[in-house]
Image (cartoon, rainbow over all chains, first blue to last red; front, side, top):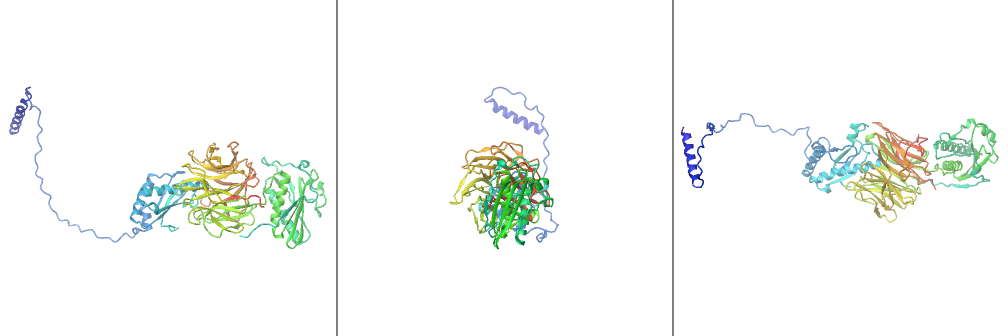
Length: 192
Length: 438
């Protein structure tokens, strides 16, 4: 009841101000049903409860994880081995390869004392000289991506091995797929 | 490696060699596949002492094997011979040779002139015409009898086919050992029949794609000696080897020009391989292709005016021919599949290549304008064709499939006939045939 009155007098006030400029009378305005307001609830401040669980124990490093900053760590961060794979006769990086290389690039930026030789490899189903050129393109794709992610270009060089250094001896889809790769060989022969 | 330059002189026209080929009845058409090889009799050469008799047996055996392997001849079994000549200056009893169906007869002897000099003399007879076709004499050291045997085979081949032979020549190749995932590859050389294999380099660096210079004295190849692929040349005589240009990118797929003064190779920059020519005297390089695609495996025509090469500029690897200065590039391969590794024949009339289709690799030939394509072989992996000096035979690498894959060298003639595995001491790949030795 009180709320209706307040509302009615408010409307009346609006009408009066409106009348000054707009002479058209407005007859009824308070017809629409008004939803009942939520009851106001009082939220008490959160209680301070003492945590009775023991604080976390500081564990020694996981002996199964490589020591950060080592070549093993680099391989681990790359997902097992620092190698990305390509489709048959292709040298474009797959999304998966890009993910791996982003992690490699991060790592290389943290551990800036390392250089790397990017080895390009091809499977055995191609002629020797063409495969050297193809594997060189793969190595260059890897290098260019690492550089695009912030690795200084002069820390990376490429070597194509064509089909000369297979890692999988099988002559089947699985073996060929493994052998089409770009391998980030940390620190190897960087002096030459 | 020590020189194998022979003290070898040939006197062609020895005694009364005068029969022109027009009078000969033997005709061997080597442009067709020879399914009916010509029967030829090569008795052991006569000798007058123990050493010359031994050389005589050895020389005849090498000649028989050379001719037989060519696929053009059937070397008759000496056990079937009816006549045993004791003096080759008399006409043979042709009837005795006709009975065993010999069409040609080689009768020869070894004469010891001094402890350091022997003569290898022989006459080639047309058995059915009853005519001498050739009478030839070589002088050499007793140790060098093998080369005189190959020279004799070349002379016989030429007298009977009208074309130069290819037996006195050598093959440079890559000797392979070890498991597939840890392969050792070494530069090696052997006679064209697989005899006298030798390593050419002491080291164990990965070495690939050796090729002869046109004078057979030098080899160009690619090596990882500096931990990256670069092109080298090696003087066979002296063992002196030399890096050909120290470029920032990989250099690979080298081949000499026909005059031996230039080298065509591929060089990659930022991953892109293009063809370059190096002048071997000034060492200046000239870029021939600028396409962003892979351009590789350049090979000069024998007149030095054209280059055939491999490019994937059209989306897949195909063969292209251009002028030697890089202008006028034209695609010549249009069949189904991918084409690689073209090599111009020393005769100029054909280009050999590798074709891959349906998971198989084959050796093929086509005319330099791309017409007349013909497939000669097929396997899991046939690659790296190289021509015999006379352009009639192609040898190539064949790799078998699987974990224990074998690397082998095979030969096939231009018609696709006479497919044979070459004898090599171990596993072998990347053969390159020398010109006829000087």
